[in-house]
Every structure is written in structure tokens, then in C-alpha cells.
Amino acid sequence: MRVNELAKDLKVTADTVRFYTRTGFLKPTKNPVNGYKIYGAHDRRLMRFILSARQLGFSVDDISQILATAQRKRSPCPLVRQLIQQRLLENEKSFLDSLRLRQRMLDAISQWDRKPDQAPTGALICHLIEEFSDASNEKRTG
Image 1 (cartoon, rainbow, N blue to C red):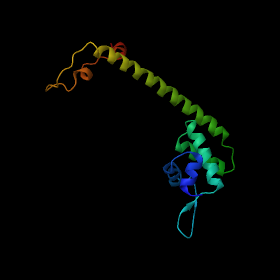
Image 2: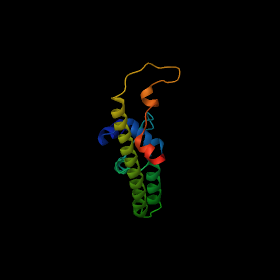
Image 3: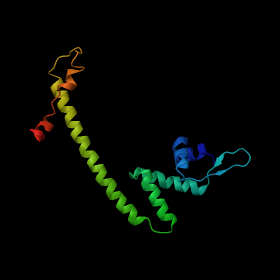
Image 4: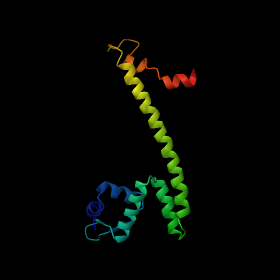
């Protein structure tokens, strides 16, 4: 099947298929007549694996390591377990960072509701941002 057919079959964009082809994960053959890349059943299975791994938060580098381990006929399961633990820790940190940012945004909205609009001056572009005091940051440093 051609790139668009594989993409449609897996409900992804053709650019997604092309990306994983450029990474070397997919290895289509070339049609000798027209030069089109032809993806086979192996490419389809591999692409489904890649999409599943991405949905679990594995990076392209992670997937490369997993595939390399499997190609050496070794179980990638221990590596997969280790990597998912790392991705979970990263996700939890990102989640907490997002919660802190959300709180700063809520604090800003609360402060800014009580402040008037002002035109820029030579010293300030937007006084709302430049005068914003992050109460949580002041507690840590103060």
C-alpha cells in the first residue's frame, strides 16, 4: 500500500507515516516502475506499535531503543518498564508545573481585575505583566 493508504488505514496523516519513514522505523520498498514507496504488512504492524507507544508517552528515542532491543532478539520488556517509569515521573513533574502555572494565571486574573488599563510608557509595555506579583513566589523567596 502507498503512504496515503497506510495513513488512512491507521487514521493518521501521510506526514506521520513519512516522518517514521525518515526516522528509519519504516522501510518501504520502492515500486520500480514509478518510484512510489510501498508499505507492507510489516510496516503496518510496526506503525501500529509506534502509535501505541506514542499514546503511552514513549518518545521517538525510546521507541528506537525498544526496536533495537527487539531486533537483537532480546526482550524489550525490562527496558519498556524502566522507560515508562521515567516517562511517568516526567509527566508528574510536568503536571505539577502546569498546576503551578494555572494557579499563577488565576492569581494574575484576580489581581488584574482590580487594575485599570494603561497605555504603554517609556518604562512599561503592559503594567499588568510587569507589576504582577506572584504570591507563591514571594512566599518562597520572602
